[in-house]
Each structure stands twice: as C-alpha cells, then as structure tokens.
Image (cartoon, rainbow over all chains, first blue to last red; front, side, top):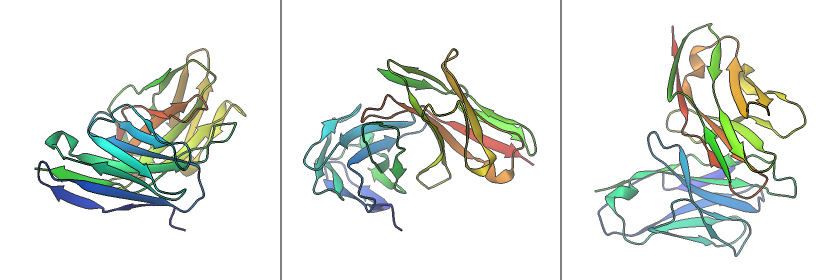
Length: 115
Length: 112
C-alpha cells in the first residue's frame, strides 16, 4: 500500500549540476503534480500532468523539466541547479474525473540543497 | 482564477482549548475545498474535503470545517486541542480543474 513514492529523500548538489527526482504512484491516478515547498510560501505548483503523454506548466516552471514516462511515473529534472532551487519537493497524484473533487495524495518529499 | 488566504501563519492554543484555523477562498466557479495536515518531515495528508454535499464537513482526528458561501470561508475547527495536533495545516481550493491552489499554511502550536 505504497501510495506515492519519491526518490531520493535527500540530496545535496553543487551549483550547475543536474539531477532527476523520481515519483511513482500505484493508485492508477490519471493526474500527477510536482510542487516545491518553501517557508512561508506554501506549496507552489511547478508542473502537472493530466494524463500520460501530457504535461503543463504551473506557477514556477522556470529551471525545471518534467517527463510523464507512463501512467505511474512522473519525473522532475533540474538541468543546471541553482541555489534558489533549494527546497523541499513534493509529488502528488489525483484522479480527475468530470466531478474534479478528488483530493491529492502526496509523497514524503525530497529535500534538496544546492550549494 | 482561484486563490486561498490563510490568516495567521502561526497559531498557539492551550491543550484542551478550541482550535480555529481560518481559510478564505476565491474561485470563479463553485469550489471544492480541502484541508491537509503536514507533520514534520512528512508529506501532506488529507484531513477533510468539501464537495458541495454538506456545508459542515467532518474529518479525521476530530476536526471539522464549515463552508460558508456568503463569507467565502472554510475555517477548520476542533473543540479540544491535543498535543498530537501540533503540525502545519494547509487549505486548498480547486474549481474542478486540474490545478489545486494551496494557502501558505498555518503552524499550530499546542501548549501543555
């Protein structure tokens, strides 16, 4: 009963390095999301994917890319990490049908520090 | 367009006292509203959701929230705070679309 699994849980990068954050869900949800959480700013949407093969920008997409590899997996890539991207990153999934009233399910987060 | 305002980034209550966390929303369509709780070093967990079936919504751990359309509010309450309620609480809104918009969160401190 894993739900949403994020890897890695912690990571330290140097400025300019690249890395990919992985996310997988086992609930057969059609929609997946990447957020960043910074103190006092709540959760800000980076990218989301309404279905396999589609992705859309959220509120703060600059410096990030995403891939919806299949229905289960949604990865977030930092091509050239910057200190401003130091944050806690959360992946979430949700089933969006006509009603649109289903809640999101969250992973435990990836704590990323960029030096 | 949709937005959420949570009044008070930090709230302190005594153990056994009433908990009231405020959330006001803005939405151009009838909203669906959620409250989530986040414990340290964990992800967000759903407390309760409003989906237009009933204006008073009961959630887990004794929490409830009342949807007031005239006040565009969805405040979270609990009659008696417990030490284990110390956490950060987030209100969120969606108009039934893909995007879900979160408030900036309220950290609840429970004083013994």
